[in-house]
Image 1 (cartoon, rainbow, N blue to C red):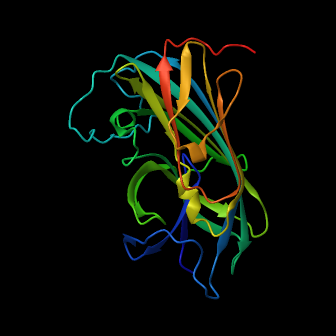
Image 2 (cartoon, rainbow, N blue to C red; image 1 turned 120 degrees about the vertical axis):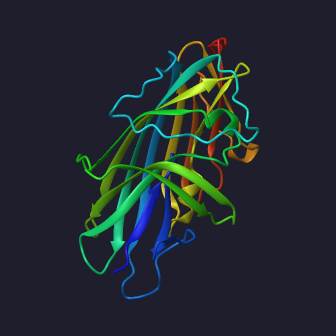
Image 3 (tube, helix red, strand yellow; image 1 turned 60 degrees about the vertical axis):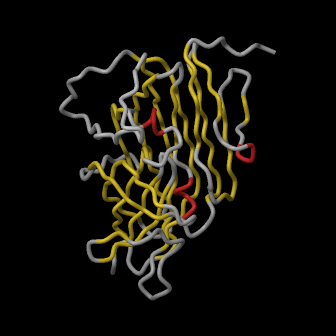
Length: 268
């Protein structure tokens, strides 16, 4: 049976098929055949904690999976005034609802960045400080750095960077996956930016039942959503931002502008 490939996004997940050695375009579901496998994304809960960080050391730890980030489109190295750290915790539930055999082994992945990010002049200089994954409390032994070039359902090509590993699912048994990672984001021109990839979830065979993304900032930092008015978050009294999706097919990502040395929100 041909392997199916799932990519969980800094955002949820992409579904593609592997043919020979070339990546196929993302598909909305498995082939209509006796060998089809169907995995659905049930719930996703994401928390992002933003705080100021000391400048990163030039030497990278031996255990780090830091990526070589792309050069900004203008080819210029921006002046970095300071650094922001974003600690991300993502928990999501997968359910294999259809397969010929059980268990099913899948090559899974989680993108943490993409070159087509509208904030790429900042985010392209971000550094991955750490990344861990657990599936039902077990750490996979096959975690590797990955990059993907995929064409989304909107017909646009995106260059994703993240991590991949092998996962095993039992049919009709929910699996809980917990992702934790930390990004160092540069501050330039008085601001920084963070992106959590949502739209990769649009290629699942069914809408995501429930997804919540919470972005919180420490004292001295202010958050500003950078999406369209149709995808505006709920602003909490403490200045944190919350996006909640139900039975959704994501068409946008979570983009946040971070402003250091900002006044805290007024208390009601």
